[in-house]
Length: 256
Image (cartoon, rainbow, N blue to C red):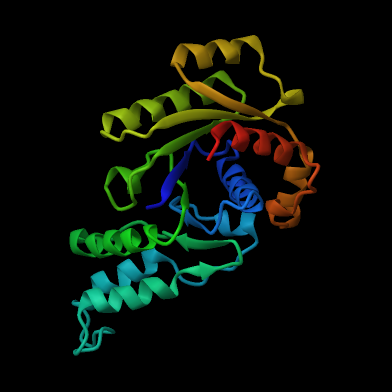
């Protein structure tokens, strides 16, 4: 059974960038194969990882949900929805050397998706048995996990920028995790883009006020911005990048 690591944070804090680097550094530490799941509706984890994605689980879910309303269904008459879904879900898995990637993609359209979500949940449960780690890039609301579509998490990593408001948002996500009845073994905070890799006193006080466990601080690195502007995968940052060095230290602390 896989150890599920869920990454969450409000938009614009660099969560997806850090998720990609976490996956890369875990692979370098021989923790793979890893299943990476992009559960953010604004999917771009594949760009951080340098992977092309043509088909998302959302596309498949929509196709199956709409099949019954079409005159000519794409599902063969001799095949059940479950069997068709299994074939399609397998085709959405992007396979790399040390990790595989699934992109959740679009949110649900109109109508009832309970049955289709059940199929999706069953397929993801099968994937869960094939990997030692699953790393999920979530939306702030943790929608896919709170609905039970994704497997329950053992580790929740919240990402904030170095502002007081960012830390407050991370605190609200931590509260949401508890309110939804999720019980990860560990909830930790990473503060991203800190000038010189240091927290100011106000931010440090807010972390303490929110009762958050600080895993580490990622320094501001303009090279990350340059890579993003140039369309380069962030995982191609130099090995001596301050961001990568800081993430390696965090992984050591997590002791996966």
